[in-house]
Image (cartoon, rainbow, N blue to C red; front, side, top):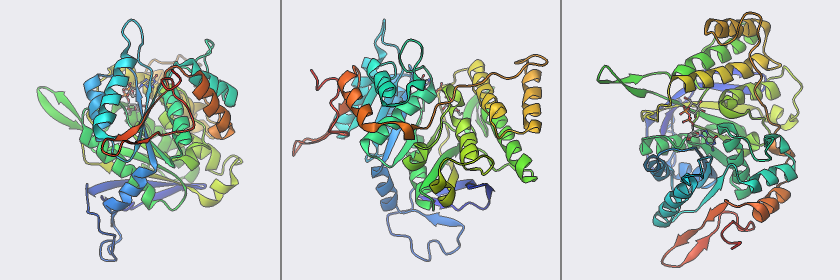
Amino acid sequence: MRIELPHRSERFGAVRIHGVQEVWELDSGGEPASVDDNAWHSIHHVPSTTINDYERRMAIVVPVKGERLKVLDGVLSGIPHDCLIILVSNSERDPVDRYRMEKETLRRFCRLASRSALLIHQRDPGIAAAFAEAGMPEILEDDGLVRDGKGEGMLIGLALAKLSGREFVGFIDADNYVPGAVYEYVQAYASGFHLAESPFSMVRISWRSKPKIQAGRLFFNRWGRSSQVTNRFLNLLLSSYSGFGTEIIATGNAGEHAFSLDLALRMQFAAGFAVEPYEYINVFERYGGVLASPDKDVMKAGVEIFQIETRNPHFHENKGADHVQEMRLQALNVLYHSPISVQDVRDEIADFLRQEGVIGEGEEPPQELLYPPMSGIDWDTFGRVLGDKSESFRQIEKVRPASLERQTPIPEIPDSESKG
Ligand code: GDD
């Protein structure tokens, strides 16, 4: 992949936010980068061999809730071969067992493509018990199961990525109609990690366009409705500290993003759709230098955030205006209540929410749920309880037909079928 180097970067304490970088060439070949390749220092060649090296060390988590199977199948086909696929489903099981259909889709794909994968249902009592016994009961609802929500699905995926021994984790929504876009996102994740100088890094995708049909024509929208609002307020927070206006943050809501596990396991995540904007807020809280940081090693090495503008259009299922409104409200709620938020930002958020008719005069935005970092989890206990109690956890083995060689993603943990 040939990718623009960031022209601008802004700092917030130990966090470096790089400006949006464009992809110039989807595949720039496998030759190692020479002095000539990167001589102008504005465009960087990341050889396909290097990208592949990162893919081998990466798990891709696909959160899914009731998406069309054909679309899910397309998403799977776009995930590069050497990444481990982790499907976390919160789809209905009754009266129609959609989870079973997803399992069949994944199994068939893995058999034909000779790949391994992990699969679990979010409401499996076994994953709930694993979180409870290993030290993170906050993720459970009153009914004793993991709460509904995309953020919660991502946390399950993150835990499985950790157990699998992968060093990087990326997230890809299951409702993406363009398999080529999925492929490009993962290549961009790998390129971002390659450019990072710190082991604590995050790569967020900013798509160039989001096509829509308007008045019978295809219209290539630049920004999503929720992103515009989230980015504006996140940038306002930065400006209020630096004293300089900025538009550096363009990926406040990015559903497609990736972390080094070294960073992800130290961070706090928010519930539901507050999850992505809160990732920015939490790195500022922990490593921005405003509050005392719990991680001295991260403060020393710094955190790097890359924002990569991909070439493929982002074409996904449209879930309607109410859904968009819900997402942007959750983003503003977490920013409003953050201990690093300042009065000017709070006032502007409250004014905006009043204009939108969401809160009344004198009312405050609601608080969102925040989870503790996963660094407190006892991973041996987590794996043991998951293996003992899970009903839906499946490990799909990579089988090479000619040699009948099998590779299980996490060999030490039994899955629900191997238990009989
Ligand atoms: N496991 C799990 N659990 N998955 C879920 C849940 C859940 O409770 N809720 C939704 N998902 C899955 C969906 O099936 C989809 O694959 C993905 O999470 C994103 O959910 P959508 O409901 O499709 O969100 P969206 O497409 O409107 O918004 C996406 O893009 C935004 C940026 O524009 C999401 O990724 C947002 O988080 C993101 O901010």
